[in-house]
Figure (cartoon, rainbow, N blue to C red):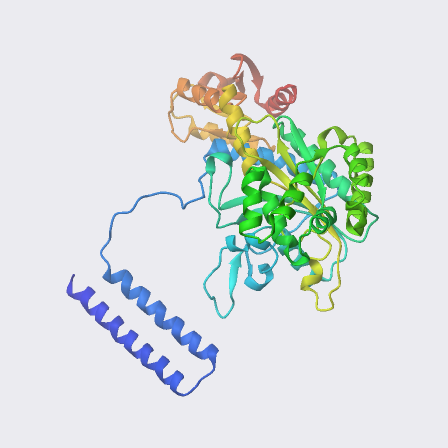
Length: 504
């Protein structure tokens, strides 16, 4: 350590001592908590700076944090293409977009996710506020509605969320990932917005071309009625629901063990639940359940089946009945759901990503943030785009396809040396016309290398100039894929390019 560095460390040690003494005096004088917190913060910052100077540099493994990933240009091109298709579907159904902070007050998120609350990323105290990274886009949306006193909106939101989960990147399960949400808020007639959410999921998955899929349906009231009929105490409904929600990943034997040993249900109740959650089908299952006299004694079962029946009717009108299945094992463990719940799974994918979309009705969530408990009925869906990307990436690998990573229309090339200024003049003309164009940043790039770049990058057209073309006021326009060339007057160049792009 040099003398200058030693002096700097000594000065910082002195400042740390002074700051510590200031904190001690404040505590002795019984100052208010905000003053003490501010001074303690300054002290910790000084100590951190001292540690940075004092600790010798050490080697570390260069990697992304656990459960995250980088995206290269090809992956980003695939991602943005998928998002464009999803947004087009959302806009077709009248969606308008919003944005919310990436972190929220911790109390906003607390008590909304059931057992999954343990997956929330907590942040350190920042200026007296206890914060956490957002877990999903639904709770921030409900907070947004309550704050703005908004009683109706049809919104979509695409942004990153964070979960301190056990990641499985091969199955599209990350700790930082995008969600694509579409929600309809407002007081409307039963099942009309809910059915449209089912239709939106179907349209999005078809647009993305991810293969065959199935949308499973159930109703929270029906589940509550089944639990009641099976002898589950009301205070254990949500906990039992969280366990049932694992049936898409774990066999009934394991789930049964959990609800007995961890949730405290007796074996007879667990076995009764098992007879119901193993059942699935179409509208015929509604009739079967209505014939269960013991089950129909519960009002929530009656209401749940009526809602499912109406939803099936509307799904038929929307022509998605062949994609829908009534499944009593579907639970969706989040606490805020109050009505219809749904989940889309891929039935032919080879990646094994599981659910790729989900959602449901949550009529009471906004009221949790309103002082007067004013409720705003809501129903919404979320597309699991990271899992969808995993499927699309695997599909490209299987089919040996290459993703184009730029959208350049035309490349301006030179056949001879030192024509870079002439290339720049042509570029200016093309850019002014709104065309996407580029050239080599080398003054005298070889023509073969320029044309090879066009082929490798998928650029459809190339302009070639030389001394002869310049003298005649012409350019050579080349179609890269076919390698055919035509001579075009400079005055007609933009029109000729647009004509060929339109044909492609």
